[in-house]
Length: 638
Ligand code: WTA
Image 1 (cartoon, rainbow, N blue to C red):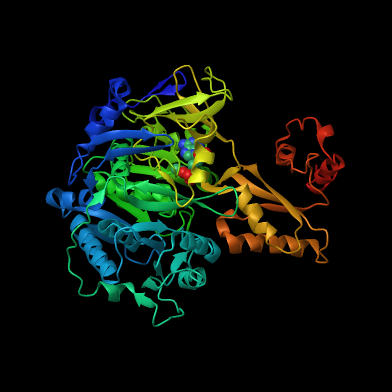
Image 2: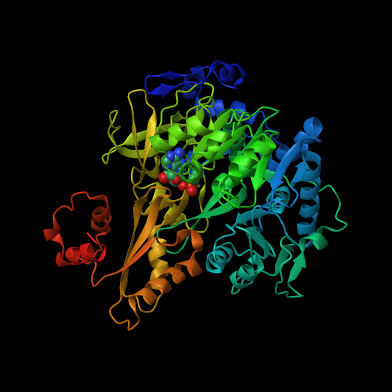
């Protein structure tokens, strides 16, 4: 239903929705701590908390002294009501290969067996376990098995390079790594084990558990490597869940830092479980008969929360897909929706723009009759892409929830609720009930409607907000709790709100860029490039891209190189592939004589950025080398 520039859920949708009355916002606002406490009571705890929210800025805790195991809620609780119901549907990349469906009972059995196997290998509560797996059922099983025994999982995105894997394994000091021989990507076998072998060098990894997936030839170290199938052999079907304190670590997930070193975001058991359960239930409006497909990779936070924990905590059937959504044909994603009768579909604006560009017409031939709700995440959702998604995929019938959140927040915090609305293209919506946000100017005053400012979270934040950066309290304090003091969480996103309070996310104010929804910092790209011995200086900026939202562009200075320009550019790209992986490759690399700098020697990335946007460059006379701007302009063809 459209009213002005706002959309509202249709009657049919509203009728069935969990939440249809906006009074929920008021109710939650009155006492957010109590609100979350009521929700927490719907989970199974081994022991109730003694305090709901405690705050010692910049630290805080939820459900203090409560005891819980998330897998008891995600698995055992479902066995009673829906043991035979499919929990997980796995669609392999190869179309000739058979899909796998695991019921709640089957998934639970696999998790318990693998949990026992990990125990037998000596894994104990609190130990960190590395998981470097593609989108196969074992990745979900491995995560849950860790959670079952209280081990802390650290997933590393399977397309990350060995160097990126190594730095995470070193930081967590994991002794076990779970990986696979290989996996399929666009019809090719990727030798993941080879990357894992390189990534564990100079780490404390003692055992590598290998899933046989692609049956490719791999190197095998007898004393270290073990097949997944062998470790689970003869393991009992039940493993007693470890009783976890609400504030014990559940997982560490790394996100880009401003240098080459990523930040390990610490997520805890109790608060995360409560937030994961209810954000999924209310935002995706899951019912018993829904089939949910989130396209995110498990290696990112969206994968953790909405491709694993949240659907399971709600007893929902969800789908994971091994491959690329446009392979072997550009409409593979559409076929998957139809094949399984997906009802709720969650993806990123980049994917939507790609669907539109490569198969705008094709999607008209799909009816998508089963779809009832669409979601988006990860990057600003422009109005054109929103309209296309609404009309061509949702057939003007499905509400769209544009969800804002971060690796740090653990779950969605801003969105329109599907049974309430309103939905406004390019706006994400309101803070989730029980969550307080504000948009502040540099002096800490709330901005008026239409004016940009910094998006912040106010106490009591949200139960799933991360608790710290692993081994780096200083960075935690500096990055999130200094701009407005220790009681206000700084998101690093600029935002504005309209007269109805609906929030639009403008984009990052730090050096993070979102490339096809993937989060990387220009700083970490620069660190990687600087490792090349011929590069004396470099600067990376994000440039607007029609499909990917943003793409990195690198400027390099190489005073001494004797190599041809094309070769040095190639080597720079290789350096990034080696240090980070293929997702972060710059779209262009420019070799320049000099980079614009202030008199104190700081590189003016803002000027480089503006050269592409056509904005006014500002006062160049403060630069120590204003002539460099002219040269850069020539090199980029302006
Ligand atoms: C951006 C992803 C606009 C934002 C879950 C945030 C968004 C960063 C949206 C976190 C959205 C996320 N609209 N921008 N709906 N959702 N972002 O950690 O800049 O990979 O700070 O978590 O993505 O990225 P991350």
